[in-house]
Length: 118
Image (tube, rainbow, N blue to C red; front, side, top):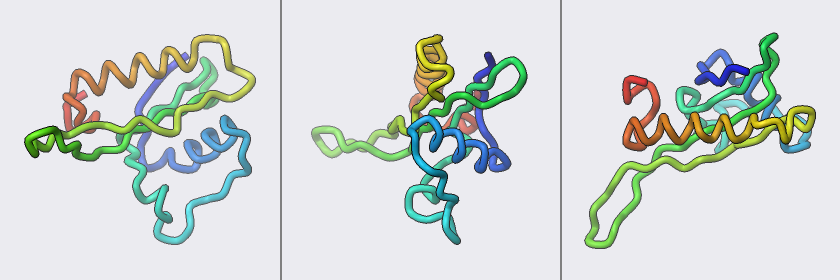
């Protein structure tokens, strides 16, 4: 299994895979992306792929700032769109994706993967 960051070219694959993982009918982003899809940072999304390149899992992170007591703002990541196709559940895919994602977030201080040089 390979876990890799997505690119803008992966949007359709990511959308189809996350919908399938959640058992939803795919609804492509509307003109301009729509609210949820426009907030999706493709350089912060992950795809889990089988050895033959089929996508079986997704994970994403949203950038935002969190206000700490005293008014200090810190950059953080909101983890979202984490799912695995039913055919690949209970095989360690989710665990591997989350470990990968959290390691990258920790190494980058919560900033985007590519901005962190990862």
